[in-house]
Structures are given as C-alpha cells and as structure tokens.
Image: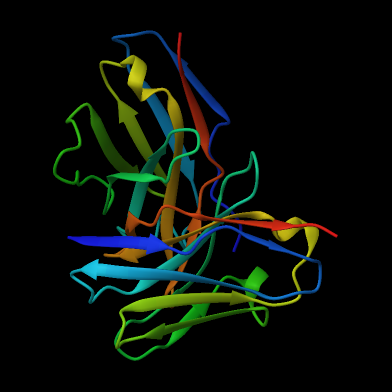
Length: 110
Length: 114
C-alpha cells in the first residue's frame, strides 16, 4: 500500500483559492467514494474537514470543498484566511478494511 | 458524539514493547483506527479494529508487530507494539471510524532511547 501523492506545498495569498491534489490508483481513490481530508495545525491532532469525497462535517466552513475525478481527489480552500495555514492530508479506502494516507501538503498563506 | 482520551507519554528502550490506550466516551459503537506521526513527518495509517467483533486489519508495515484490542466493558481500545526501534518514535493517535477516521484522540508521544 503506497502512500497517496500530494504536493509538498501549496502557497496562496489571503482571499485566493488553493487546490490540493491527492493522486492514487484505481485500487484506492478511483475505486471507492471514501476519501477524507484533514487539517492539522502544529502540535495538534488532525481535524476532519471533508469526508466521502465532498461532504463537510457540521461546523466546517463552506470555503472547504472536495471533489474527485478518476484516481485523483482534490481539496479546494476558497477565500484563504490566515488560520487556514496548516498541513492537509487525504486518506482513501483501499478495501478489506485497509486505508492509506496521502503524503501531506503544507498550505502557506503569503 | 464520541470523545477519545489517550494514555500519557511513554519512554521506552529499543526492543521493549509499548501499549497505548484510548478511552472512548459518548457514543462508543465506532470501530477504531490507529495512526502514527513521526517527528516532522506525515500521518501513517497503522490499522483498525472492529468494535463489535474485535477483528483487525493492519497496514503491511505493521503486520506481526502491532496488536490492537478492545475492552468492551470499559470502552477502551489498546494498541501494543513489540520490539520497538528508534524509528518507532512518534505520536500515536486513535481515531473513531465513520467510513474513515473522524474523531481523534489527543495523541500519545512514544520516545525510544537507549
């Protein structure tokens, strides 16, 4: 089970949008609609921001949105704010109760 | 809603085992993931335990060295890793499952030093 591929960094200016890709295969991202995204600030536990590709838990701003096309899932953060500066991770279901994380992306607000 | 409280930091020697606990409260019917994060590194999925039957699944890297269990009477989940190596030093998280980890414990720091 190889880690899903994410870009190491995604810079953006306040108010702009950034999109983070999560590239997998036909055995994980492409096979199931079970892709989640997490935001992690330094020293903190990850926080769920998107589940089942494009669903937002209650309390998560609608600036965060998810999508999937083929073997690639994407997270878009619109209207970038200073507090969005964090690490972001995707996770995908591989089948047989196995999951795999992405490599992680650091979002920097310029 | 589920809340997860993990056991405190551990300092172990190479070759020793470590056992981390994760106490669930609120709704306690979820399966449980275990995830680790080495210093400055990304999240690594370790495995998952089914809450009702206790069956487990593991990432290949942890097959044979990690045992996940649960005590239904106390709604506490455990992750035991044997034969610790220096590169097992990390923060270990439990996370309740709802078709993916959704609610996380605070993390348990495991240090490995001679």
